[in-house]
Length: 309
Image 1: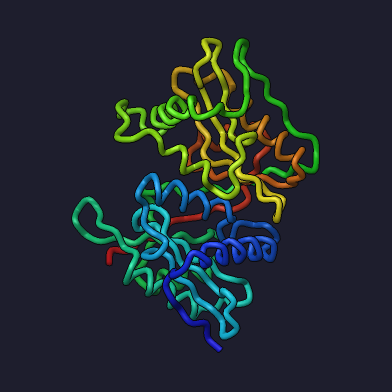
Image 2: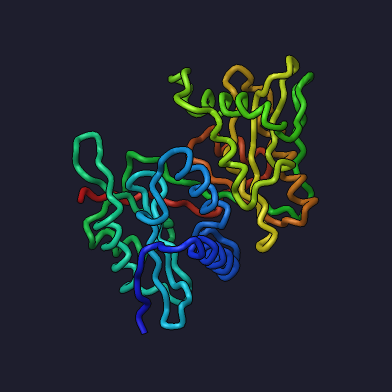
């Protein structure tokens, strides 16, 4: 019987989707064909609550079997940026076409020209989905960077990266350090806009995520005591995996090996906790090189396909 679609309705749906993502990650040999659970958490607790990137009720659609099991999930991340998550037992062309049509009807976003756009992400190896997208009028979007999905296997010897003299790596401090951590994120991700907007207390939402651990929320501290780099790691003990998100270094402290040192320390801590695989996504050549320097290998590329709707 064909799975039936409904919108996200209840708080329990959040936990059911998390179970679905864990199950399908394992069934897919822990390749991120679907999101890992940490990415879904991060979208909810940071993307939605802090950045205004949608809502669960408006932007998540669930397909269920006649036994009430989740067969597929459709969700956005950034405006107009959509992901199809399917259980491998239900990955049919008919279901994918239905998901594309629901995305076209409900998950588009306006572009700079006032037209509505939709971006659906497809693995470069997924020729079936690419064909369906082409037939629906989508084209590979050369304006947007593809996502390089990277893994680091933790069952062997790890690459150690040392800090520049006078710097040290430690977990983030208590609430008195949140403001500086928020300002550091702003400088890293908005280098051309030095004045952060609004309330800087958003870090409390990050820490509400189910997988958050302060011992895995790492910062590099400069000789003057100020924060210079960061890497937040999300450890899932069910799948024995860790996700690095976000990672960054202040421009004033770059080219000192801080990013590599923070990543290296995070991998070491994950291994001690029992993780045997870590993930990170990268979009630019400098990021590719940074992650490769500590042992992350590219294994899959996600490409954006765009259509004006």
